[in-house]
Length: 107
Image: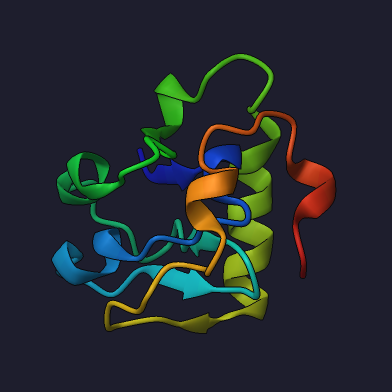
């Protein structure tokens, strides 16, 4: 089982999770992070670090967000690894509780 970044991350891109990942499985896009399912070792460390609760075990991804499992795998192949924490996006706090943000995802 792998972990999956879901919709809450879009337009926030907090990188607290990156700091604790022992295998550097996070990939960085313009306004979203993805987890490479081939690199994730299911350690769970990233889950508690995410301030917007965007990371779930693959089996626990909320209803209506199952498509993020395949999306993480797809984007992880396209995006470069992120291995150091960075500042969140400037308007992250404003977007943190917004729902239905998939249309905002930049590839």
